[in-house]
Length: 252
Image 1 (cartoon, helix red, strand yellow):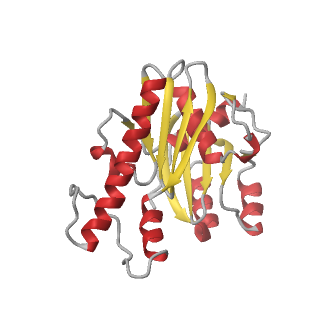
Image 2: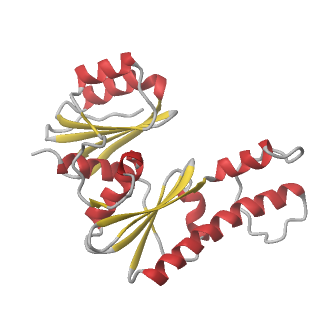
């Protein structure tokens, strides 16, 4: 992990706690100047180094899908008094989701980024990670909802776990339409299935909403972006940027 000392400014720290990894982002005047991902068990050590390297951090927001331990939570409270992203957090968009209390904090962050960076536009955010999520915000700044689908790794695991003889493979792009072995058939099915799903969703949204902007993000975005036929903006930092915007929206 590399850290650098900067001239003191008012900075924000956002922390995205996943099931296995924790992602940290340091922002200065709205610009991401440092990001780092660590294993959850290394949380205290990582946070300690970041707070030492960036002593001008004034506000912190935590988004948690996976829970921190009591020791980690107590350390965070002492080191960086923080806001927690939850159902009571003020959001920069009008949430029309029918069950807002069930809406994942990661999806909230992504829509917040879309609201900030593409105001008055129809935006579809596709997050390709453990799951593939589709989230839509319209030109009136209203979040309408979206869809949740299986991620790439999950598809490979499902094919292996729920069949008797199919092997568990590592993800691989495939230009083959017709696989001529079991392995090439699996790669073709998973990869082309995901690509066609994404392009299909985009085309369906385009028919319903004018001037659609499409954002592709998430851990598998780099794996998919060059094969998607529709025009997209790829942004690996979209979730962190959304968390920072929520933090700015809730602090003076």
